[in-house]
Image (cartoon, rainbow, N blue to C red):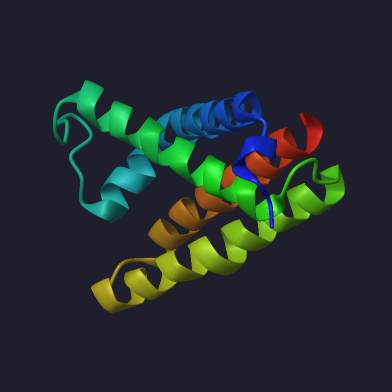
Length: 133
């Protein structure tokens, strides 16, 4: 197994930050209005204090990146780490969101937006972790 001490914590931090920035673009200029419409969220009414929401979102990104780094192991090959990120994002996270969307009666569009983000999120984790050992 991978010893946590073998994981590059700076790479984990950068991976989490990269996905956090992706989220700002993805759920900002790219899909904000479509996502808000599909999710039933008022884009002009914050859901809680923005600092708390963004802070918690970053901590969750950091946890996900750290667990993914342990899953990949120390010094993963780039192609394998990006491939694993795509597989995890699409095969585990997006499909889990799909199940939730089906039972909640949510739209295919909402699933594509959320599932697409998480697929790219884990691919980014793989990219950073595969490049920076």
